Image 1: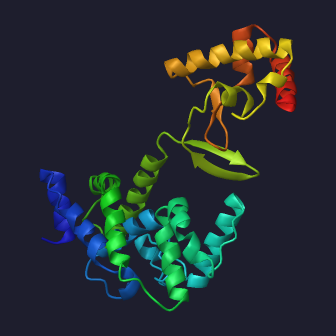
Image 2: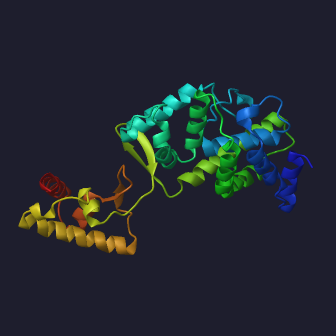
Image 3: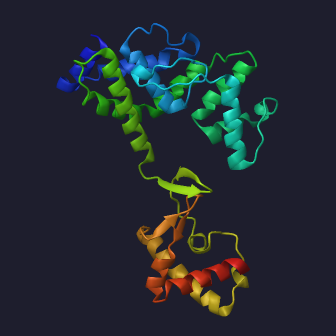
Length: 287
């Protein structure tokens, strides 16, 4: 049974052989070493698309297959390493170099998550060595995220017309898989902008002080008696909302923390929004 026949079998009987064909390639075929010349079948192009969704750009695969819906670029290992250096510096202030990579490796694996494997591949290539653990790490990533990938494949298989040309079928599957996978990953996340940049964060409740003033380390004792009375009223509202899981009237900041909206708290307190905004600015300036 070839790949397209397996897709039709899934449509008619719910057979998951097509999914397993993609998974087998993802877990066993080393694109990093073999490249993409003369791939054995269309499922290999689909598997590569899925791997890119999990690991970012595979920097040592220097081929472009735009006609299959793949959009790799000829990125050198040095360029990929430099890209991660820039991202780490912009978000944390840490300066990563080839020399200090070993001592930062544990932290980098937690910070970049699946993109870390791309960074490590670039580092090892710069040094002229390749880890024999590469495919083992790849298999771990595939197994960990397979449920989401399989769901995205199902979405694509159910909609693709396998009577089209091989390139058209693969291009459609790759586009549909990417669309459904990214949609699933952003489910439950909030988009926030800071200094012209957009990122997605998981909303979290850090407590009433953070929801009101944006910190959990303020000196509430520095508030005046009048300010403290107003703060206590706001705190009661936040605690009530948190207990009920009611955060519709809160926005999310760049840390993912829930922050109560001035208009909402003003309505709850029977105050003007401008008065609330001024009061909060004064509180923030003294704590």
